[in-house]
Image (cartoon, rainbow, N blue to C red; front, top):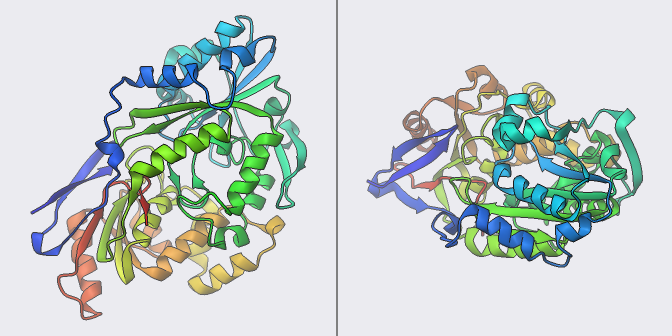
Length: 427
């Protein structure tokens, strides 16, 4: 019987799928891609050969206040590999530069001290200035202008007042922005809650182009790239990582040109063909993206793209932090009619978008397409509040799924595995 390992927290859950029921495994070719160089060499090569931009050391010359936007605790960006070399590049061009790290939390909770140390290493945390973005700290926000959508672009004052604004990050498929990385360091990374809510409005989320792997015609992306330009984001260093969270590709330079090169590399390896199945088992790729239910919606969208209508998605996510979004939880606990919920979101004016609305809207769409059984450490009642069925092992979840399918007259339904739902683009 085929054994499939599903990342779960910092470990994994292994499930043997009966051969007679095995529908296949959808995996990114990133996991077998061999770059032929070390992680450090790949980043060094990227920084030495920027796309559409001078080298970072050249851009840093004569600049006093340099702000480096860095990812937060929810992103598996290998900052320990990227950041030291970016700092070296900056100081090669300007030894006396006043450098501040601005942690791009978007609308997430504040990154904790121990999370910063794990992400950057204790030496960098101890020796560099670090500021954690707070999207609700209006005193430290500045209105920069108006986005193509009509929304106000309000950003962290540190970034706006910087002489040079740069960012690190990684590129992966994103379930409504097309791809992560690049311009997302600014919006939502260091934007006000008001700006993020407007960008993530119901009409945009409902747009057919606001999907995984799509950039052209995606209204969410269009606002994001405009925000990056208006913020004068001058340089990015982004990487692509495999399932071991190791760098397999690096690119640096202009926020549009470098990001385009990176996503073209990624799309060539992570595209997989849909294989309609009765049961699809998926994950969020383990830690750190499976810390809560809110983030786990991302992995579910990969399964949504290949599970049969009224089939079963088994989402495997440890979820030590619980729901991950208070309003997200309340929305599902209080509204049982999913169709009515979605219609309400789509009809909501952009400036009236509520917290977590986008995630709720996408999650409701998934739930209306398929049953979801949730394998986690989260409280069972919490999982039920969110319209899912709780389980504590894949074996238990498959047994539950079989009972659901039997009520539809389906016995021994096909089982498909997606070991990392956020690393693939299901086509």
